[in-house]
Length: 281
Ligand code: AMP
Image (cartoon, rainbow, N blue to C red):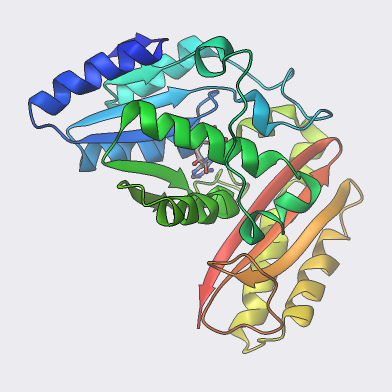
């Protein structure tokens, strides 16, 4: 496995692979890798001849008061996880390798980015789309892998690919959880022991939501109320949103029909965590 920093190095290596007729998978990440990321890498390794993992803490997807500076980093452990999982190349650029000082072109998506996380993080998806489009243009993969953990991000990327006619297959991968149900996240490392216990309220509340749906309830308000009630039992938890949305447009729905996403964002202390499940009628 190779680790490179510059766009040109990636292009040279991928061009060689292309000459040999090899297929390429891309797994975009922000580093501090865990089993969630690893599942994406493993899927790419299984489906492609070569796998590129990008590790880039993308400043433009963080708001001014967010955790860019404190975001956990461990490049050596990341490299070992990638190598052990069968990745062929890590692309680990510096900010200056990705953004010229006078960089001024951004991807702005309407509608899908406005609800859920987009409400409290208004510039987030602009940063995500912009960096992912750049990574697509740099690596030119056949397939790219994204986790259902960030369900709105997955929907946004699928829409960007459709709207811009990008010839890359987007592969969604299921949420990987800790044994006790907490969705794995690099941000879990911020939680102190009390908060770590409190964070279980996310998966527990979603289980309640799923149970309510399974009894035949289709009214979104009632499903949201059931989830909210569980979260409110946890004193350390503060709800950002509890929503039932259309799985493609990310717009609120009054009742469950077709494919929906039940998504929550909850602050545990200072740490904002997200979780979700999909449901098809
Ligand atoms: P991040 O490094 O947080 O930007 O995540 C990089 C990719 O890994 C994104 O596509 C995430 O959705 C995915 N990912 C993060 N956590 C998980 C998880 N617990 N299960 C599945 N995929 C995940």
